[in-house]
Length: 342
Image (cartoon, rainbow, N blue to C red):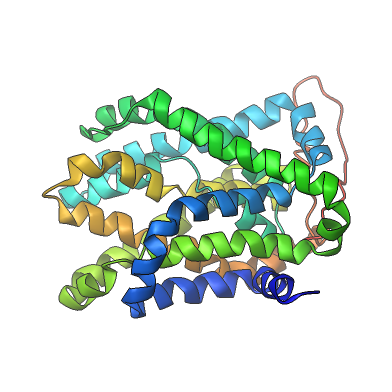
């Protein structure tokens, strides 16, 4: 095992801790954040590749064989979460900038790293991957009209160009995964943690880059930052618990996975799309930037709790069971072998 493999293996085994401290390092060491920011495109491809490496083609058979169950999950994570966010924004009195930042974050699709985080937590990476890919490819088409309806938010983008760009990233990651499994399958099978580590490295670059300029803001407005940061954690955790509660009858690993993609949204994508409209609204950008913290810190904070909660599940967690009985379907009892992730 060479040095690179050892580094990736370590990152895979200590993924939640690496991300937790990575975002703090980016905050405390601004030069690192500055250097990481230009690498964001490479980072997105890397963690997408890592996510694909955590699932196998056979893993998709179970969820795709239950199309009605899968459709419910996809509908909730793509459209249900934004609908609840819009309702909350209409009912809960918050400052205007905070409301807009909250909506921009929660209208976004699930975060692109959801499958990797699910793998690190022993959940269902294939379910997280399907939810993420489905919503992300549709996001350029549905986000602008929903944002305009929700809070008069103007998202500036060419939807077809953005969709093509996202499809290229996802397609390239899928193609590279196929090649690696075909021509380096033995190495991939022997080093499952290194495959997780590949995604963690990409996520670490994102965590570092997202902190560019944050240290100055934190030192200049500590009380405002503290209040918004607390709210960002509460929103993330609240939507995770809501997703878990709504799908609690579908198996613990699956329900927690739905909760994961419900609370962790692709705030970076939404931020880029909304950037032209945020000029003169520093409070909106501040809330969006702070929403990155729970995405990278919550896995380390909740890993132990989730392991105890999923103690009844086979560890590593099954890829996807989705065994809730549908109308007219006989009861299904499946146990899908996992890919060796802890």
